[in-house]
Length: 331
Image (cartoon, rainbow, N blue to C red; front, side, top):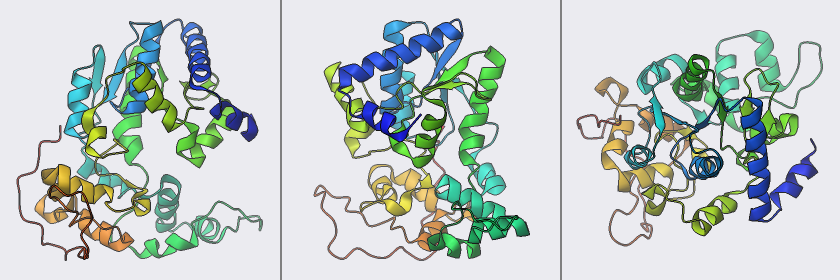
């Protein structure tokens, strides 16, 4: 596949995209004799995917990974959706942080930081300086912007998504023999664009076969579909959130305009906000020091009726200043 082919598909009108998506789903369904499932997060993208799939094949199950990190509104929305199988990871998020580290910056950069911190000299040369073992150069290495993160006083890694979502889904697929249909779109990241260029929408021959029949959609297409066909969606979007993944995810947080995702969380879900900032030793997630270290504001977003910003926002508070509060039941 070539990039221009993706761009051409992304420029198509909505009805053409729907027809192409239906074709990809049909090919996938028939290839696997109907033994498929929809990976359902409760977010708008997977909501649209599930709607399209069930217009064609009403009995296709949806599978939701209950990580304990979802907004309560997402969980309630998933509960209202019929024929959804709930699965859970083997570890809590605290255990995952202990094992894999905090998911900061982005998946690739976090993974490279983790590898470098393991102390492999060859990987340090390649991942920090872009110098390969054979003397050649690699354009894939730790960005100079983030090299200071090697000195962070906390562990960093990219294994969170694998532990909390991919492993439970893989286990479900192995136990049932079903193969996944997922609502990821190439627009979301360079990694997903590269994956589409490599396999297209239906990766029949991949090590883990996977279908992404909406890969060439854009976010505006998703909302256009929802409004055109009156598809029910989670109310979390009406609360000012553009993303509805894991509540405490730090990937991309440095790109957030104010109010950042954590400032927004302070306004809408103060108990979850306190829990994520609370010191690790006090039973929280210890994210105050992480956010301070990468320079992401996380408090003093205006919580009054006026949705404007404070003229003199305070800097993040010193560690340890979060009041003690019983851990919220996120699950």
